[in-house]
Amino acid sequence: MGAAVADDGFDFRPGAQIPLQGGGGQTAATNALASAAYRDGGKDTKLKDILGANSENHPASVKDPKISLFEPNLGEAFCRAVEARTLGAGRKPLIQSFGADPQTVVEHCLAASRIRKERDRRLRLIMLVCGVVFLPGLLMWLGLFQLRKTLAKGEDRKTSWIGTALLVGVALIAAVLLYR
Image (cartoon, rainbow, N blue to C red; front, side):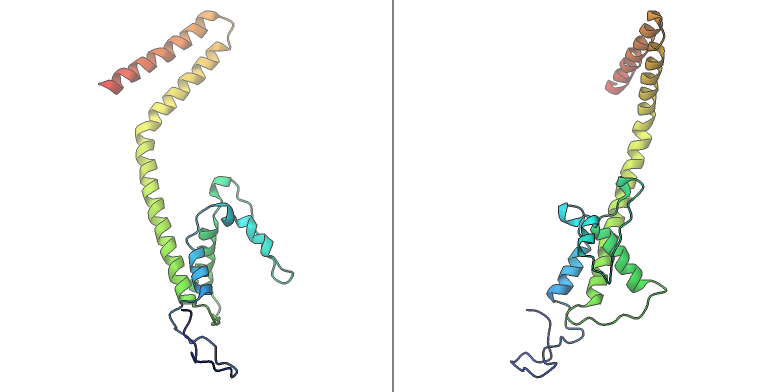
């Protein structure tokens, strides 16, 4: 197991254990980096935890999202960073890191991004269908509750009763249409 090295025997000359380029990328470092592309949530994949690995020379920063719903997870952020730094138009030349195969890591990042895009496309379709089907009824129902609340603010009990009757009437009409 491991990467193919210059000499598999017990040769202790300098450079004897340097991994060969294109040795399949089956090193632990390559596999660990490639698996980071697929991480989607969990306690150990919060972006804020990355700041624990800061050093004096290379500090990292994570900007808070405007809405927590839009916070990228570790896998998405890692894939975006790898794609931007290795495939981007203004990228600098890559330096081969012994023990890691960048091509394997980039391929896994591209595959993980494709999987996420397919998932997002399916979710977008589901949200569109459910929104078109259920949103008008939901908006009408919320509007009725708001109307009832507005009518209940008045001192007159008759207007409060009208709001309740209107709400019950619409609920009955919806039930009849549902079971038809």
